[in-house]
Amino acid sequence: MLTVFAFLLAIGVLVTFHELGHYWVAKLCGVRVLRFSIGFGSPLFRFKPRETEWVICPIPLGGYVKMLDEREGYVDPEERPRAFNNQHVLKRIAIVAAGPLANLLLAVLLYWGVIAQGVPQLKPLIGTVVAQTPAAAAGFRDGDRVVSVAGRAVSSWQEIRLALVDAAMSGDVIPVRVQNASGAAAERRIDAARFGDKAVQALQQGDPGFSPARFLPAVGVVEPGGVAAKAGLKPGDKLLSVGGQPLSSWEAWVQQVRNSPGKDLQIRIERDGKPMQLSLRPQAVTQYDEVVGRIGVAPLPDAAWNDKLSFMVHYGVFGALQQAAVKTGDTAWMSLKFLGNMLIGHASLNNLSGPLTIANVAGQTAREGLTPYLEFLALISISIGILNLLPIPVLDGGHLMYYVAELVRGKPVSERAQMLGQKIGFILLASLMAFAMLNDFSRLFGG
Image (tube, rainbow, N blue to C red; front, side):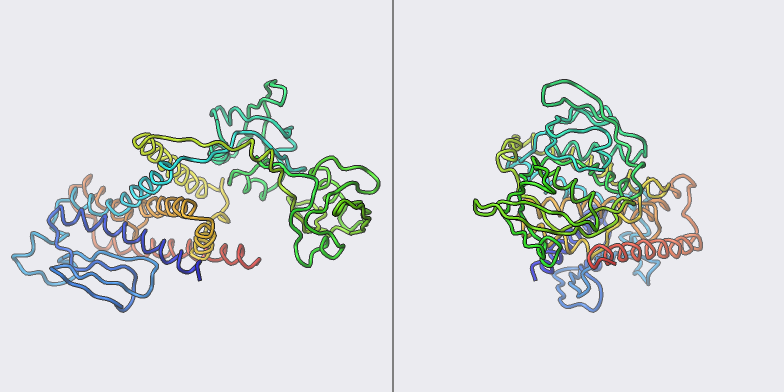
């Protein structure tokens, strides 16, 4: 129920702010607004205090502002100066652009609210390097401090991820400067292409195979019905040895399991201070085009290391606003770059998300607290703003494309050309939505 509520609240806030952008600028330009609608379908609620009817409809996947327009019906002669189609092209551009720009402004305000409270950050220290990943092949080690990514200096894990995502869009090998535990400098080169499409996709999401977290050689979570559960492993079990070989780290345990798909393993553990012997056979699964072993356990976090990683950054009111604007700009630029790379085949369409994934994430962030939920709202608001600015007919960006063409040509684009563009735009948008929905089903239901 929380997921549904969080999703509907998110859509309601984001759509309302978008349409208010169109509404406010239309009123400033002297255009009569006939209807302001949140949602589609038969109205559930109507309110008309003056000349604008305010409506809430049952289908919450959008909204619209209906303005007086001679192309849509008869307009009284005295009202024609207030019709949208009779406005100067620069006014029409301002009205149409106001919706997406309102979403970007909303993102700045949301980030501002989050950043003004103080921002928890993680130091750019590598806690874990996963075996047989691009990071492991590049030579990263636990305890490395990341100094720069593709020449871009970083001071936190958030900056590392942003820099990795940005650099990954080029499709090239990514140079990363580090300092090891003794302070010596070195350069590592991440080449995800060697590991297949899944590794490239993970890198495009900021994951080359290392993370800030560090784990103890002990079981934290056991997957119900998995290999480990059937063998008798329980949360809290300390891992001592595999096949008579002592284990000094969680990574060593993972390596043993990954290298033993379908093979019997004799393991020695400690439970409540008492040693025990267990036997299990890792399930064979395919990862990065390679068959590896899996047993269904997660590690116990190293609390002392994780506490060492955390620090808080505080900004003043205006400093927080500046940081919010920068973060919104960076995220918007990355979104545009990602879309561009999808068009030329450098980024996978599997990264597209639809309403089911958005609803799922809305519920997850709402459970985590107000701050994660506000950050989620900001991210989706940026996505809506960028998507609507794309030059695709039926979107705001498509109308802006027509108006810019009108400025250049000195006359409007013909209705026939606009109608053709609308049809092409609808087909393109419907195709993208269908693909995003397929991705949603694949992620959420394992298809």
